[in-house]
Length: 381
Image (cartoon, rainbow, N blue to C red; front, side, top):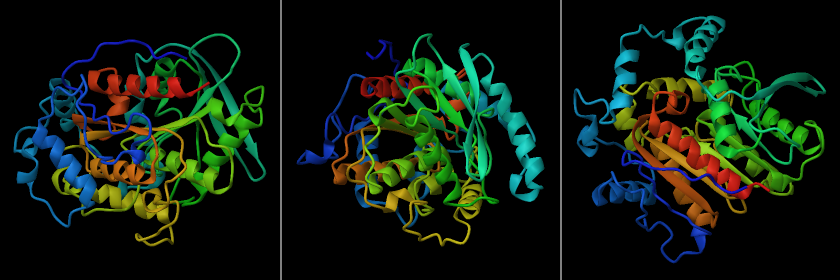
């Protein structure tokens, strides 16, 4: 599939850290200018690179990040308008209310973001497993035989989210990729901590391979994508398949993921206080729900940043500039470079965690989806 052409505007920054195989480069993290790098200064590029090379910092002050000055939520006027509107609502503290009620409120708050998403045929599915059944939905942007598919793993801190909360996102990803997208309701924590959510993602990929969508599909016709906690599970699934000796999938797309319970990074210090929606305190709660009896220093696939990354398929990475998890992706880019994995890393400044679902109002998010869609389309057969 050939990538669709499109225009770009200055408020998206793209750091192309890999064209073919960055790990083979003598200077793998040298940032090379490209036509889309219009809004980030050389100093800011150097800052991101320094953080990638040095890993998490023990502490950081707001002086390190001048965009967090009081009163300046985002120079992107669309992002600023969204944040201002959200600030007028009384957001519940999900940690303090019964989980069933918290999930109901999360679903209700998420539903409006799917309005206006591309119309397309969908197919409700059930994935029957020996001891459970997973609800799934297939998005079909074009008519005709199904030759490839991207499995999308929703975010929500492993605690919230569903194919309904991310309906609009999956429609946009399907439209951008020009191939079907399969979303799945994996089991949620804390009732089902690691490895249950990962097991469900792996079972979904096997369902696709074995013909659950009609005809069996070869691995090079399957991609996996995910946002936030879903990006964690998508990456872990790729690693698990490699460790099991299975053929690599075509590619992966990882949007602002959380890849290890690391809270001493500069981005947590700068953006985790609450002004940018996701807080460090909530992220700690999500990790505790997901890890169950595992400790924060786990080296299991629950924290894929800490395991061997060699031999993975090409990956698209994106990070939101005003996100406490931004440095998770910066560190992942460094690890992938060291492992010789081919990837593309887009740093999108001035937007917040969770921005993917805001694409109907936030042009930068729509362009992020289109970039990932083009990347996946190139690698899917």
